[in-house]
Amino acid sequence: MFSNATEAEWWQDKNCHKCWKYNSVGEDRNKIRCKTGYDIDLGYITGSLPNRVKKITEEINCPYRQDKRPPKRKKARPMPLFES
Image (cartoon, rainbow, N blue to C red; front, side):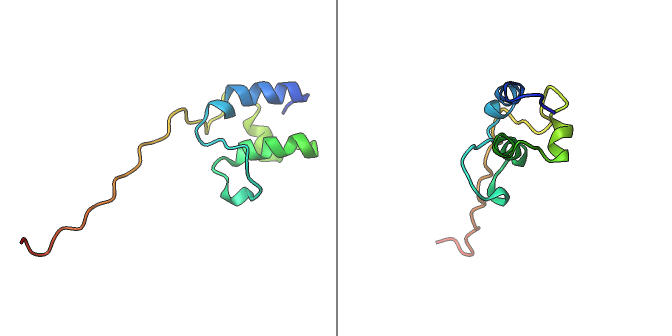
């Protein structure tokens, strides 16, 4: 848990801002890729964090941080039924 906003900013700089999933824009929590980052951003406004986020932020490194986006899977092309 953060004792002040400066600690929250430090934690986000070390974790959220280096993660490809973090997006600070959005209103619908269900459509956000990283709910932890969303909840911390919301905590700046409301002044509180959910218990799940409090437990995560006790550690220096976020367990969900992903520095590199995983490669996209290529769509399988359908096999032709007959060769022409």
